[in-house]
Length: 306
Image (cartoon, rainbow, N blue to C red; front, side):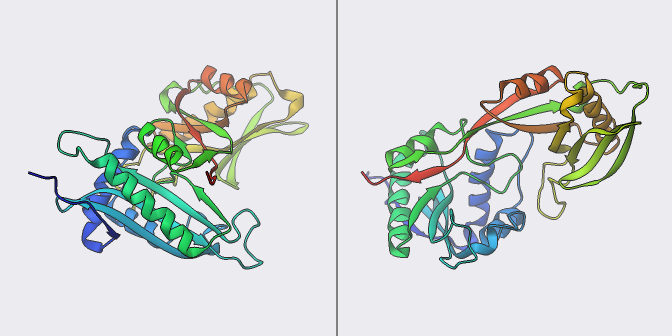
């Protein structure tokens, strides 16, 4: 008996549960213990409020799915950025596959690779109809720590590369630590800490008589209660800075200890951090403070005509 035909079509609201399941399968391969709700996925199709700079530049959005046996086996979300002067130069008149997900081949989904290729052809056709200046691709799902193209998705990478997309940007290392494994909070003679609101969350600043020595900012608002079903207990480092005159004096670990004590009071048990892959010294300092590498993610994919 021939396999049921594959169909590519626009997303419908009654696809929401299957799409959310597909999204969460990809999230689970990157971040432990995180999943997103149907409401989160649907909201992300309409706008990205956390991208307060780039989201207003989007002029059109479309979500496409590939269906077989009445099941959504692949999905992609596309953006067309406006060509207006107020749009940043990199994004001006650009089209983007914001994310692409599909089930790897399995006994029940033997044609998932074919479905993905068919959907990718539809995505490229849509970008061509938009007549955009440049075509980008990414893997930024509406979940904490999932951005760029994580190394945990070799099937997506192979699809992008097979379609003519090339990695032209940088690579970031995402690290994670249990707050219980952060340095112990011990007194530091002559140094005090002040907790305030910072640019990227709650800021802990170390002071001595000469002024500020350094600070760390932690964001505990990665999970909005009305949107995320399972990511509470996770925070990330928004900023970590030590005055160059005090580098190597253990101040970075002391600041992380202050933040860790606060996070445990907040019920946060995991803390994430991000570093560029080339900054080995910064990565080593975080590992020494209790972090471990979670994934590497490649940012900046651009379509090159072949």
